[in-house]
Image (cartoon, rainbow, N blue to C red; front, top):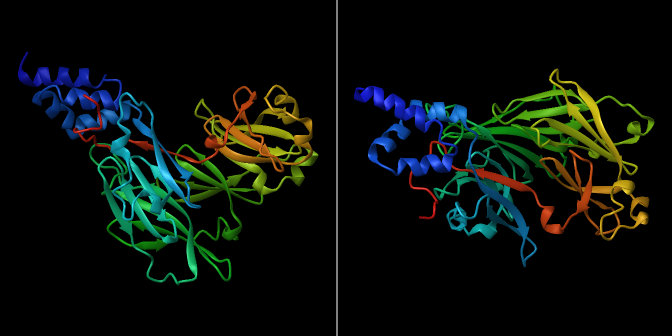
Length: 370
């Protein structure tokens, strides 16, 4: 077999490597393997065959001071060294910043005492870039939300990185409650997004949650979708009202998340009942499950039936689960959206989780022990 043929066989073998981390290790075996793995065509093919590698998860955690600071937990402590994901390289240190969103290997953060001071960083490579304030933004405006958006796909199949990202921000005006939506593109500038035809009263939008590549909001009966791949907004409808009490549920009673099967779920909690809707392939929503919370939680330690004489508050939504508490009591519990079974919950489970992937294309000097 000639050299080109043996290289083809090598690439086929390397395509079967089961994870991003193992691929980095394979690149350290010898120069020939490293050269094969560094090839853009190989990386593009590998990316299409394997899910991205999650290095770990960040949370904004309350410290001794009133403000919160980001904390990292590796997905696999024996493999990923958490020290390589410290945010101590950020201006003023990690405690000066609050994470707003994550996508790929990037985080977008705002200054703890100034929401219009925004940076995007890549923790593993310890790089960051300031996002300039829009030149026409006055001093009475603040940033209420920031979302990372993919850039253009590169030759290795990567869509987002420190040289290739966009940020969508929602800016609110303190005096008149006016909201504007703008998108910043790295290397260019801010561009205001006109979405009045989708959400006429954008300042009244309620954030439902994140699922797949999108963020979901609700206004009245309209479901507003921000696509993280394109930065575009679109709309559809909430599930149909199927019972009398549905008409009394407000838009703040609806939430969205991914199930463990990867399908989107909308759920609502009202009058002690949780309903879960699943999105079908045609795009319509179907009632999948329902549960009376006072019945489902009977076996949870600390249970008291009087807890359900007041509304239940949704504290946290994650993939396949929800954490709730009575509005007038600190007792917390979780509901598994697959089984609708209840379990105890603790405060550390109630902060938003931001996944962080290893950079793509891979950095071949990685955060691996040994």
